Image (tube, rainbow, N blue to C red; front, top):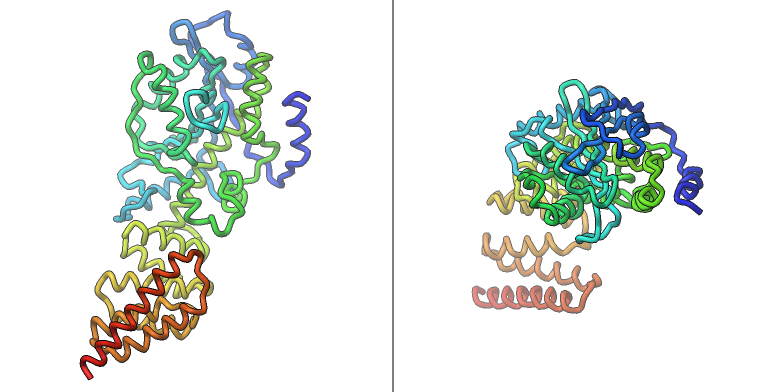
Length: 421
């Protein structure tokens, strides 16, 4: 059975309630006419044209969307507000677009002949979208044959030589390393790779939604978080097979679904960056879980002020994460030498959850080292040990380490009580 027939059968099981927005295509005829171009009439109708370099060519396709086009929960224009909001954030964050104009973000994705890395894996399509003044421009660069990479990368690298910031989904681990690998093979014939910043939204998706979504693939995040529902999308795993079939049969219509899939990917990256930025900065509606995970994200970056504010927001408005937020706040206030606030939280945590020994350990440390009250310190150390005994540990090694630490604390406190009695 051909790949086309397999795809037709698969589409019957891909019913989605909302269709993709209408696409505006415009052919970009090349000033050079070359009779050797196969299917030139088809490419022109598809909004694509050849780009010639020396004795070879690649295929360039451009599509425009209105800036106010709705894509899921947002309009494309909402990304302007997201970038503007980052200008007010004085904190280190992997998505911080401070100092960038929205037009300097290049939303980027590739289609390859396989999912593994290395020189044996070829990129046959580079796709990107950019925010222009009154529209969104999707730009796709297609490899018509394995021997056309010089033309492809010559056009692409000249086009993005002023690039300031990529926005990708797993692009740091896969897409751009693949570009670098292919560039290494032809670097004597094409421009150098530009230097740029890079926002990889996969890392943010893992931080915010890995515990609430069945997976953090872009297709899942699109549907569950962004409200983007694709109809008759060509699954990404079919793209390599369709490309190989195209190379064997020479029928460019085989690839229409691959072009659409890549196009929708780079458009969804705009909406995803908009939403993720809003969740982190508080510029959009966010669930309690998202607020809590955003706080943890800032905490991991040692952005204490932002993390503290978000944890307090959870305490004030949430119902499902107050215990974890209090634990985190107690630790953060301790770092800031606001130990009395930490002590209050540790006492509250003990009353709220008798099966967590950590607050008792912290109170034992506080009464031993700050208050010099060794009786109270011993009381909380013994309480912590009693709770700890009732819990199972994943590894014997960790269990032994924790037991030794608690036993050593209790023994030291007992000795101090005897010493000062």
